[in-house]
Image (cartoon, rainbow, N blue to C red; front, side, top):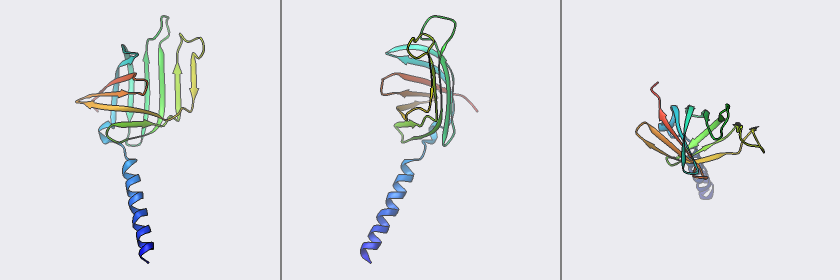
Length: 142
């Protein structure tokens, strides 16, 4: 009987811990305007929106990597979770447009999970990806 109770308690604690870990950091919920995309240490102006609900996100941004009339862009959507330092975006949709790329000017697929470290400083959110590239976003008023 003691063994059954111990197993039950451990199972409940594990489920509770897993549910707590999977929650979103509510500070991220809202509408964020894309401001700067830092690629290889070089800041580029960026336009677009990151919209985060308590469970899902939609991100659509454009920026300029190469000369020409068409801009580069990223579009992503899916669920997300965060723990206070790290956010993981599950990419149900991953679209990249790179007009200057000869090998892959357009990418459209279900993307891999993408993790980023994040920092909130007032109305500014910085997402730092494993590549060290960064998105700088500013919270918009609702």
